Length: 338
Image (cartoon, rainbow, N blue to C red):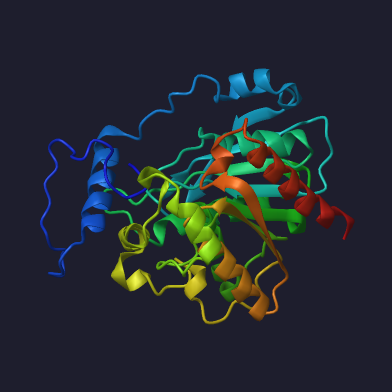
């Protein structure tokens, strides 16, 4: 799928759709593109990453400091069945803090093998922050919100309930984070934990998150940068809305557990660190959410990664990705002194 929401080759063989949704409403071109892409992924699977050097073994060869990290699958049971999760830990390093991390992928894509999940887990664990990377059921084959946040909440509760065994850290030192769509999911989990009296994360980390079903306006400077980008690297507001609607349904667009940016009350959320890409249509959502958190008296830090585009944590060789991992480590490590 290109970022304008359409399949890369324009059409998906064998796919047919009505021009209207189940409620009789006319579908937009963005709706049709999102549905076609989800249909294709559901039947053919997500296209494999063609890069030969982003699997675990290759990353540990490329970056020697990652070699001591042990990677193990962790069984997690959720209300909808098993939830895939992967633990990254250097057994030689004591842990003051730990991290639960959730990848993105437009709500219907992404895997534990993508660098945004796998490399992030390796890097943090190599620097003394054991990390549980969590997968979730995608918005495919009729799956919709709140199933993905149910999965992630189950993994969160498993992680904090077994923090000493998994991480060697106390349960109140476990942080929660997510990228892009994963940012929306972990923020929704945090709001639900707050409302239900669950164990809250020590902090939230959000990387280029999508926090609103409708993109807030970007600044003139960001618009100028984005105007120079090819269409395949853009997120048109109509596509963002179509993705949000495909994930949450029309009714879910105003559900704060689906998109925390529509919440009327953000008080009580944990301290939050937000990274946005400077060259990203979704930047406005991260910027706006930071303002909303400040207005709710939640401690928040916002950093714009220069020269970075959306999804840059999928590129371990990029200076922007390495700088951001350093910043995330520093944010989490600071809590070890509290």
